[in-house]
Length: 176
Image (tube, rainbow, N blue to C red):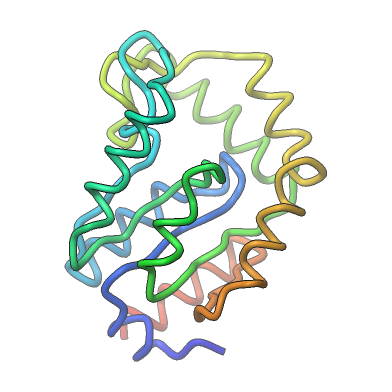
């Protein structure tokens, strides 16, 4: 169990989980609570018009971000995880059920369609994307096992949150 003091002492935190779990929201919350700069991988990866940057460019942008002494960074992008995990002091995993993530993604599309979220790349407005919805729906079977293997191989403290109620309780403990 990771104590609130350990979390408050962490200087570099990775927030992981399925799309829709609330990684970016939690990253902003932790940034404010702990005074750490927030870094959003989607901002580093996506170029305007939903164009994926090259692996080399994305990796260089991530390397620059994680070279800093202090940060909280959200996103999975497993092919870019080695440097982040190597530098991190703490991992926070929002391991929510698929139905919660899907509901949240659909709500996000409904409420922010056409706008660029603060955690998204410039020129990438929220939109309904059936391929992305399929990816979220199958994340638990296709992405989660690999992430679980990587996380379990790390000698890092892990805060493993399985439901939004757990996350709120955990944040309340940090706020005290």
